Amino acid sequence: MIDFNNIENLKKQIKLFYNNDFENEAFGMYKKLDEYLNLNNIKENNYKLYNEYYDCLIKLKLICLQFFNWDEIILLIEKYIDIILEFENYDLVGKIRSILLAFPDYVYIDNAKNELKKIILESSKVVIDRKKYISYLNFPLKISEWLKDYISNRGKNNLERIKYFTNSDKFKKLAEIDKIKIKSIFNLYDLLEFTSEKNEGLIGDLPIIINGKYFIFNDGKAEEITSNIFKLIKSINVNNSKDELTKLASQYPEDSLERKAIEEEIKKLGG
Image 1 (tube, rainbow, N blue to C red):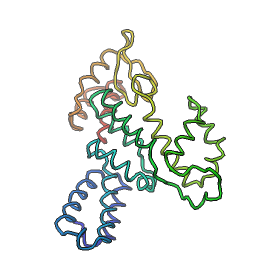
Image 2 (cartoon, rainbow, N blue to C red):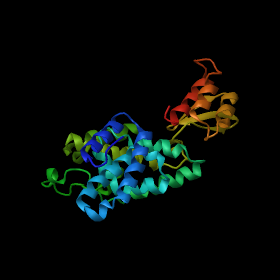
Image 3 (tube, one colour):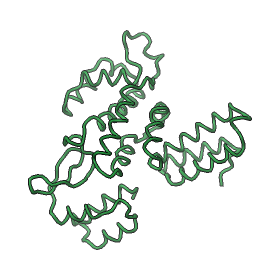
Image 4 (cartoon, rainbow, N blue to C red):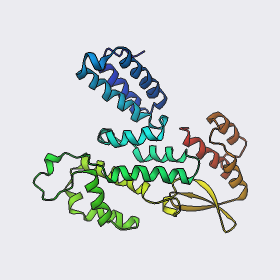
């Protein structure tokens, strides 16, 4: 059991959770640390130490982001996106995609996407090292400024988007570590940009019917499926446990489309 009196050990434990995707463990520790801070009045007794603990608390929440409700998630991103981008290889887009796919339908998904899109478009956070670029005239620093430049100068298809990264004088001036951060912001915006009424806005393998044919849209690409697979996917309840889905998958041949469809659902649960 972790000794919360030793903050250095706590930081090592958090790093271990992050490196190994121990989301359940991170959530458990978050609850215990939150309780510890409240019971011991750390904030009132030692505000400087409390800030160190609070930083640990935020990092634990970010590791297990999907354990929180949507209002908490967008507040976390709004207030701490700079901390998020300091995490090496933090898959923010992947986490948001998984969270959105847990929503009951596209109306909820689109409302959530619009909420988060507004937050990042208006963000005044500076996530790059401003000292490195002080000599450049009219150089974007804030997230909102980078997104404005990106939206104004990139094209509508993937090839033109790639050209932005190779042709933009501003982006090319960034240090490699800052390029990674700004690209993460752009990738998040790309996920949120389109509504689910457009193919590009479909973020998961939710099945739909078009002209009597059955399709799964995955990242805007259509894959035709049989009516049996369509019915199978629709029958899977969002509350099915991993064990229930694993048992269901075992009833189909290893290379069958049915089994692959169920295994995709298991992946969403962290399997």
